[in-house]
Length: 177
Image (cartoon, rainbow, N blue to C red; front, side, top):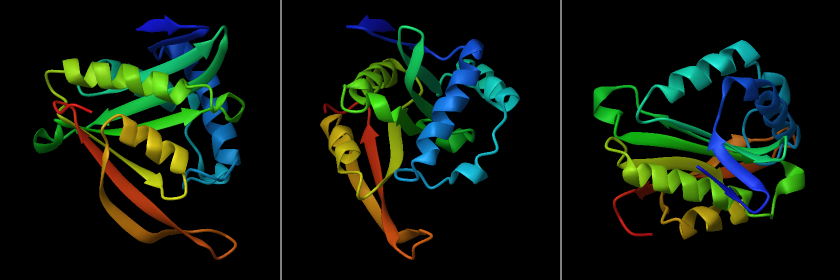
């Protein structure tokens, strides 16, 4: 992986678990881009350590972190399919600290991810879901070759009674972006 400017992208390590938990909780506290509400987030540090270990051993999984010095400011995961008929697919998730958005961290993580996926002997398709109102994320995914494969209207209902559509996106990694 590499260092770009003041940011380092590298595989997640067990020692990152505490910082990852903090970042994950902070992003969920915003209650803007993810369906999990802060009080519903029950992952333990131990479970996250196990996840990092397991993902590092599977050819169709990826767990990257972005650091600025000692500060963990973003992460990306690709959860590969567990079943034989789905092991060629991976579900993508990206989180960036609120204070670090707009600095290209998501793009740096995505660039590393796409390089990994294209070199993978297993992964052929990446998929994700994103709130329809998260226009910056949708534009970023499109810039990496992702296409909309479906939309789930009013998929999520918020406490104030409003709804959010969910966009499903995919990318075949052997196609040019």
